[in-house]
Image (tube, rainbow, N blue to C red; front, top):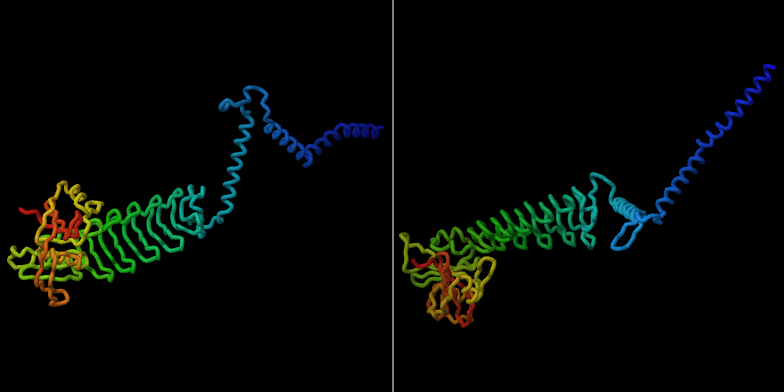
Length: 401
């Protein structure tokens, strides 16, 4: 009897527990969980994608149009996903992160704007235009700029896409052009400028891309020809005034030609286009030639950033209206006309060559037109041998008195 009672109790317990066990197995099975998750996701998407508004509060009013809020949220979410997808795609086409690999970007790449460090930047046509440091996408730091032929254009320091600091500039064929200081893309500070054949042209101070300040000038063969002060790429010729011939010889070491008649001298400093002449009536204790006038063999006069070539422009610059005067030519003037106008000059000059760099003047003569101005303690005389308001060369002298 006891055995039968135990069996009955056991059977009753199994009947109660079996449904619970069956449910637990069902709830913990992967198929059941997956079905529930899928159903939940479907329900969620159904709600999210159900753009049908049910109340006026479910709308945004935009320029008089009623737009479903859910639709607006959905469009924003889609735009965000597309943006993330685009960034991921861009990242995927870049080289894998490696300290030894330089990342390469197109010049208009969005990712370049957020990049610091060493990179390569490609031009629109695909060649590598720059390799070096950037900061927030701007070329800043040390780097190298190339042209489309792969030739180095510039190598040195940059700041926000401009040459800044020390660097080296090259001609289009790769020949050295300049090495030294830069500011705002231009030569500025101390540096060396080279001829296209590679020889040194100038060493000294620069400003805004021009020879400016103290420096030394060399000819195309690399020989030193002049040491002094420069302004806008040319020597300050007025600083030769009143200097003795020996002092001028120290400053100018290039080719020269001496013209002499009696006590009058005209010395041509051929490689800088200048003649200096003495005043025969004046003398020093050592009876040495002194530069009383400087003749600049140019038909343009530099005034700041402008080049003046006629009377109207000169009148405007000097602030006075010069009178045109016809005068008999002096020795140095005749030499200057010979060098600037040659056989076309109406001023005659007859010489005999004693040495390669020395000519004795037998005679000279003729008339020329002059326009004279004064400014900053100097007298400027502009000369021509014909009619018109232009000139062939000009003379710099100290103001009288």
